[in-house]
Length: 232
Ligand SMILES: *Cc1c(COP(=O)(O)O)cnc(C)c1O
Image (cartoon, rainbow, N blue to C red; front, side):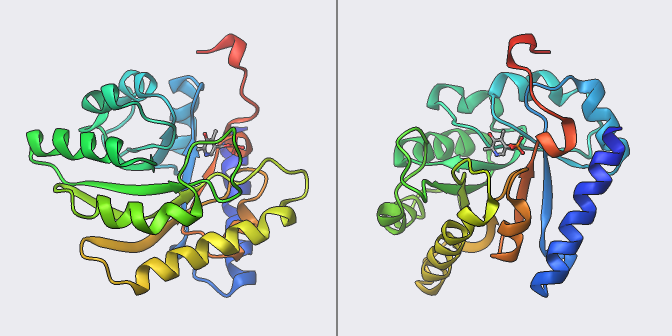
C-alpha cells in the first residue's frame, strides 16, 4: 500500500513538472516519515525513497542506524540549539534555520567535526504567528549575516505554507518566496547559492512545483495520516 502511495506521489510530481515545462530531475521528493515506525520507512525505501524528512532530533537518532546507509536524513523541523550536536553528523540538509544564533551553533559544531553543513533558511512567508521562520522582509539580512559563518553553506530557502483546503490559495505565497530566492541569488552573496527551494506538502506540492519548488516534503500522501497519540 505504501508502495502504491509512493508511486502515486511520483506520478503527480511528474505530471506537475510536465505542466510547468520542467524536467522531473529538477524536483526532489522528501518522504516525511515523522512519527512513523522504521518498518514503514523500509517499505517506502523499497519503493525507491532515499531521502527521509524528520522534525525531531531524537527520531533521527533512533532511526538513523535502522535504515540502509544510502539513506539521507533531512531535518525539517524546528531545531533547538542544544540538540545540534546530536544530529550534525547525521543530516544531509537542515531545512529549518531561522535565526543567527542557531546558525552560529551549527557552525561551531560543524567546525569541531571538520564538516560543512548545507542549510536552508526557513521563511514564514505568510507571516503566520503560529509558525517558525524569519519574515520575508528580514530574510536577506539574515542570509547575509549567516553567510559569514564558517563551515556552513546556505543552499536556498524553505517555507511551510498555510494549511488551506484549496492549494490554489497558496500559489501566491509560493510565487513570493520564489521571487525572494531570485532576489537573493541576484545579490551574488559569497558562500550563498539559491539552488534549493523547499516548499509544498501533501496538500499543495503540485502547485509548489508549478511555482518553482525544487524539493517537496510529502508525509501524509506517502505514509497516511499521522497519529500523534499512538507514536511509534
Ligand atoms: C509534517 C511536515 C511535512 C509533511 O506534511 P504532510 O502534510 O503530511 O505532507 C512537511 N514539512 C514539514 C516541515 C513538516 O513538519
